[in-house]
Length: 252
Image 1 (cartoon, rainbow, N blue to C red):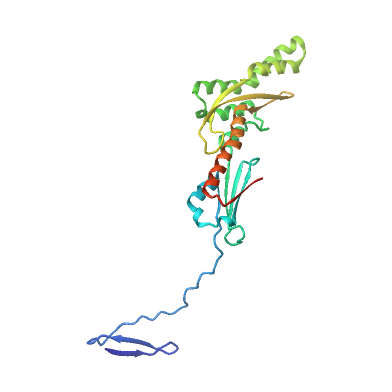
Image 2 (image 1 turned 45 degrees about the horizontal axis):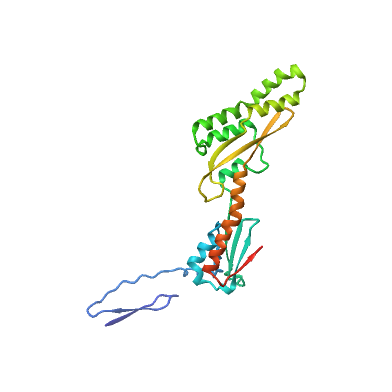
């Protein structure tokens, strides 16, 4: 085997080995800097949030990968939350998996059982755009039409009847009570991730001068949230004890 040497000023010697019978060879000389090595970074921490089952589903698959004696679970019923913490003493690897019971998007938009106030026409328009949550299109149209014409009907009633008894406030109250739909049914998920259920939604009108606002309330929806606060959380906690019996569970 032949051996040739190539010299270049300012560069190291290049040695090439040729097979028997070969007299020529090609060499490619590259100039420049070697690629810069990436900086060493801290591990990416596990930060997960999801429905109330999230800590349970995580442990079902990963319980063998964590040290149960360096983990704990916090249960906060007031906030409808279960919080799994593992590698609790390791600042680089500490992980958090949070499961929460959250109200569904449509339930929050409606502002049921909150202090949210709707103008009648505004509420009517919103319900019209979300008629899929009504049992029938006919019921949706009846509620929407009643809300969108409420203010006009009230004003007409007030103008007509105050001429007779002069008590505008009393007449205004009567007109609202007689024209506004007392309640209507919706089929919506109350909690995020849950199936839709049928609930009765009650309307409550407030009057400030000649301005009408409506609040929505649903005792049935409130019962669903309270049942979930106890039953759903209890069920998840019971399963957590079976899947990871050595992890301490603390009620807050």
